[in-house]
Image (cartoon, rainbow, N blue to C red; front, side, top):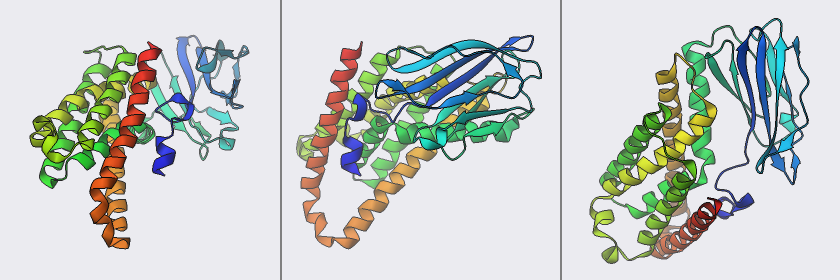
Length: 322
């Protein structure tokens, strides 16, 4: 599992890009439709967006933009969207997901995540609090579990900080920091270009991996004595990365605080799930192979080189990208 996770598949730190369907309300029963399909070996993934029955409008051919295939057109839905159904045909034959963002009226944005197990949904008249919580918590969990770079940072932090009390405060500081910048960037109070943010996120993993490769006595005193300060500083950068994903998803007008809270909660739940899995695997290995404790230092050093090498690759790739 570790080797598969560390493979630089598709030259990217994230999982396969999802499909994306957006219906922006223009008024007078007209919607601007944007359909974006992942690239699959130089061709668009064979999935198709199906709009509610009664919507008219011909979709132009998909065009490649360097990363995915997309098309934009105007659809007329005489009956509106409420009560209709949206479906992504053949999504069940893939291993990717699709994000649907739609407006019942201009400024009234809603989001729905579709998976191979749930390829469509009926548009309700009012999503309400439960609907927003469900959608954005699910999106937050999905984003953190698909973000290998964020998970590698947390994993390196778990290996670096062995004292439980210090580890608790380091994880808490990381959570607090990325929650602050996520909220600030999502609300428009802070704006930073995504490419440099992604490069610094990779660089933060290189820093932890380097410290992890050193004997404890040679490590930076700041990282050794006050790991919470280091994790807080890098957490601010990681929060900007989360905000970039949230900007692509969009926030519903009138329910921005709730959606922001739900997305952040989903990120935290995904992070807790990952930490719990790492702890359970470590406990299982210790019980099955008691002698593995004697190899802990060598295994940690090997892990530091694997993590650092992959993160360094990402730094170079992301710097070359801009």
